[in-house]
Every structure is written in structure tokens, then in C-alpha cells.
Image (cartoon, rainbow over all chains, first blue to last red):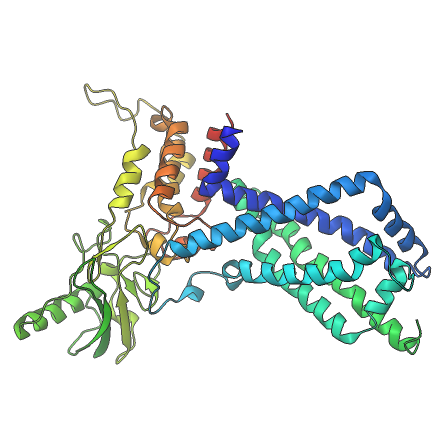
Length: 225
Length: 246
């Protein structure tokens, strides 16, 4: 325990904590997307509702949910601590600072992109997680909830924007985690870049496809849900 | 060539500094940036003004003394060179050039463009050394080192400790400097004795000196006059993990 605490108090230890929790959250994204893909099944939401029911009631999933919350909190908490520490490392700012000449924008704005993702998460949990766990007054199934929420173009725009920003967050975050773990040499660089592209490009596109799919359905059916 | 120089003037560490504007003329494109400062200082001395204080020594890019922040970048707009190797042909005639000291909590300003980089010395004292038996000079080839490893160690060893990495990093992190030292010694047989203690001690001292932590923006690598690779930071992270976990 002493070693672990000493480890966490060091700057490299904190970076590792952010990287590890970040990758853990990425694994959650894949599971979440896997279930979401059932929305495209075209069976009126039958299979999707079944999985949603499983996720809401299975005791193992409920336990994992606690781990997930801890992962989120640790990721956010550690990142914020590091941000303050890093800001205080330069008490007087430069009059002229050309950061763009030496680094990618995505690597410099992770706290900002992460904050947007966090705000999205709060809205998202309010709409869907709360609805699935504590029911909703009208007694909609999860599929109906999804359909109703995504029938609103403003909500869809919010969703798609959030996933673009999540993609940008992961554009830096994913490969950065491997650098922090000490995995950065010519043997693995291409492989890491390839897997990173799945996370910052493919996953967000698939997530963003969901609101578009339902928006199209909304207009095709004349908004009757 | 003519230039407008906006130079950070600060009397001492306790005073508040500010950018002061100077005009220089009759500059040739093959003059180094430090020569322009020399010329300006001559004019200031003639006028009875206080010359601009700046660090310099070898003026050939190997001593690491001449660290300054030029137009928003460590050692100015060129890649792979120190401020002394920066020639005025890198600028457009009539350009305004902003010159500031390297800014970091770990590098307090002494005067004008001179900063106190002794934090680096203390990091080195914490573990940047090897135990060598005294006695006769060892034979040069007594310890064979594969060429591949020697090359990587040489890339790390080329660090001149100028502090450009800290100055360029948005977090004022000293990770590239510390990583270069840790990496160089971890790669070579001579550095094995203190391998574990070294990485832990040097990183602890780095944190103590008030440097920020690395967020992998890699601006250090881009601005390093010796173009030291960030793969050394990855190696140091590995070294640290191994040292803590074993």
C-alpha cells in the first residue's frame, strides 16, 4: 500500500493512473457500442431491449458499474490534479508562445475535450441510464426512449458534436497512454497507431451513426413514435 | 537587415520584468542571434545603459548555456540548434523578434534572459552518475557494447542540459532531460549498479524542483537542439515501473 501511494504521489505514477483508467474507459466504450449496434438490428428494438434489460438487472454488471464509476472518477480526479500542478509549474506565462510550432493541438487540449465529454456524459446518463434504472413515467422501453430522444435534431447535434470531441480526445489519449506505459519503439508504433485509429475514428463514427439513423427514421415515419 | 527586438528586461529575481523595445540596424544575414545581442549591448553600453544579460559560452551549440525563448520558441525558429547557432537569415528583414527567458518555476530568473538552471544539477546529483573504481585507465574495448545500443545511448548522451525541453513544454516538464540521463545510463553496462535507485531518485528530485508532468505533447523533442527522441521518456517510464514494481 505504501509503495502504491508513493507511486501515485509521483508525477509518473499519476500519468500512469490516467493512462490505465483511460484505456479501461476505452474498453467500456467497445462494450457499450457492441450493445448499441443492436439498435440497427431492424427488429423493432426487441434484441436491444433484451440486452438493455440484462445490463440493468444482472448483478455482475451492477458490480462492474461501480468499478466503471471509480475508473471515471480516478481518471478525472487525477487529470485535474495534474492540470493544476502543470499550470503552477510556470507561474509567469510567456508573452509569446508558439505551441503550434512544436505540438499537435489535440495533445494540448485534453482537459478541455475531456470536460466536454464529461458534460455530455451527465446529459447522457440523465436521458438513458436514469430512464433504464428508475423507469420513466410513460413506461417506454429503452428502444422507445432512444427513438424519442434521437427524434430531436438538437439532441442529435449535441450527440454527434460530443462524439467528434471524444474522438479528438482519444486522438491524443490512446497513443499517449502507451507512451506513458513505456511502449514506444519502432516495433509497435504502427500497431498502436492502427488500434488508436479504431478508437478515435471508427468507434466515434459508429456512435454518431445512431442519432442519424433514428433521425432518418423519425422523418421517414413522419415523427410518429 | 533591420530588426525590432522586444527583450525581457528584469533587474533581478525579486523585481518585476517587462518587455522593452530596441531597434537594431546594419545586421547581416550570417550574424548569429547572440552577435546581434552583442551588438545591441555595445550600443547600450555606449549610451550608458545597462546591457542585456544573457548566458553564453561555447557559441557552437555544445555547452547548453545560451537558452532563450525567441519568438515563442526555445532557441528560436530553427530545428536542431541552440540560440548561438541561430542565424539572422532565419528571420525576415524588418521583423519584430520577441526574446524572453526560459520560463519555469524550476528555472527562476536571475536577470533579464539569465535563468538559474541549477535544478538540473540537483537532479543529476540525485542519481545521474555511475560508480567507477579508481585505478588505471580501463581498456577502451574491455566492455563490448552493441552498435545499436551505443547509438541510442549516444542520442541520449547528446543532451547538453540547456533546458529547451522545459521551456517549450506547456507543463514546464523536465521529463526529456531526466529521461535522456536515465536512458543513457540504463542502456550502458556502466550504469547498471545504480539503475533502479537512479530513476526513482532523479524523478523524485524532478518533482521536488517544481517541474510539471509530461502530457506527451512532444514539443520537447521538436524544440531540443540535439533532437533527442521522446522514446527515451518511454524508456524512463519503463525503468521507473520496473524499479518500483520489483
